[in-house]
Each structure stands twice: as structure tokens, then as C-alpha cells.
Length: 107
Image (cartoon, rainbow, N blue to C red; front, side, top):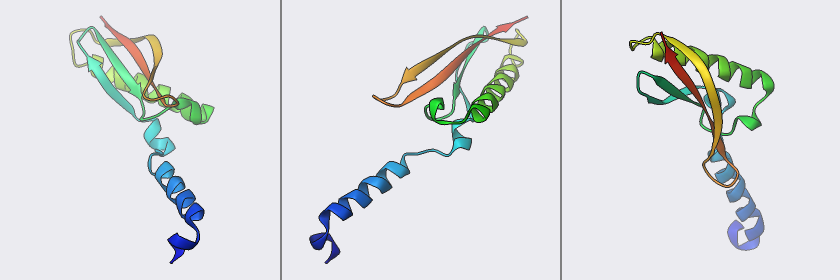
């Protein structure tokens, strides 16, 4: 039996497959998610993981998508224009962060 003969190899393969299962694709990391909206502001979460692991081009693309999503959401309320206000990184675990961008909805 393979497990009895090479337990270290089996454990290493199991650890690698479990680690890869939690990884998102770069495309999913750049999809904007609306995390809050109250007609005066909208908060957009950039993707499902730390933006530090994607290229500069993908990061710029994520910011463009977040800007477009904020403009779309702000247009639904009485204040029609979205203006970027701030950005923060929120820890999900010891090594994983998400980035949230705050936009003010202005007239």
C-alpha cells in the first residue's frame, strides 16, 4: 500500500492539493464586490484575496473595475457621481488580506 510505504510523500501531496484548492484565479481576484451601500457611499471589495499576489497590470484592471462598479451603484441613488475616498486592507487571516475601496456618492 502506498500510504504505508511513503507517508511523507502522501502527506506532502495532500498539503499541496489542499493549498491549491484555496487559491483563486487572478480573474476572480479582480472582480469587484459591493460590500456596503447607503446612498451616500459605497464600499467595493477587490476580489477574494490579497491583491499583493497579482501583477501590477491586474491590480490596475481591478481598480478600473471597482471604479466602474462604484459609478454604477451610485447612479442608482439620489447622488449620481462616485468619487474615490480611501482604501484599506482588512486581514482575513495571518497572511491573507482583502482590499476595500470607499467611494462617496456625490451630486
